Image (cartoon, rainbow, N blue to C red):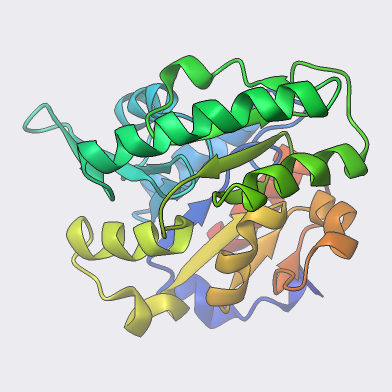
Length: 264
């Protein structure tokens, strides 16, 4: 990984948009600071599209799309995107699965949930599960005492052995049924909302993240950036970001934004 100082100056000039994880990338210890939010505002005011990509639920994403200075938001690890048209006062909602597929997946996840809760002591269903549409999130450190990595891996293993896709974030293990991910929905969002072929223009975008569930995006985007806490997952990941900040969490995110705003 390279330092942010090695980001080429021409990228600042050609930058079209920034995609970013939220938890422990924009936030710090579960909190969104005024400074981190201001960094998003500054990016948007500069005419650079800002799009969060998160494992957080549909209920949260509706609020983010409406109230944050963003072009849209991709949620539940690629299950959907929401984009609010302020002029037309209309929320655009795009799901990658149809209603039948979503319901079938939720039924399967409900059965797996009981097995995980019985076999992995100390974990819990995430407190935001009530507003999720497509996936199941198992909490291993957000609202429960931190579990050891062996327990987190066990949760992931149970999901995978049951035929689900599972990804470890900085706080949850998220699982779903269906062949989709954050990157696939990012391509769809970029085409349908920005009218851009991302495969041809990915050099004009940046992705910011912090954990293993961001790996497909770290690998895809040549100009991927990690906040410093991504180093904590080095042994768990095969693809790290191209650049890394000095600071962790929100402070690292602010460093990244300042770099692209030319105010570092």
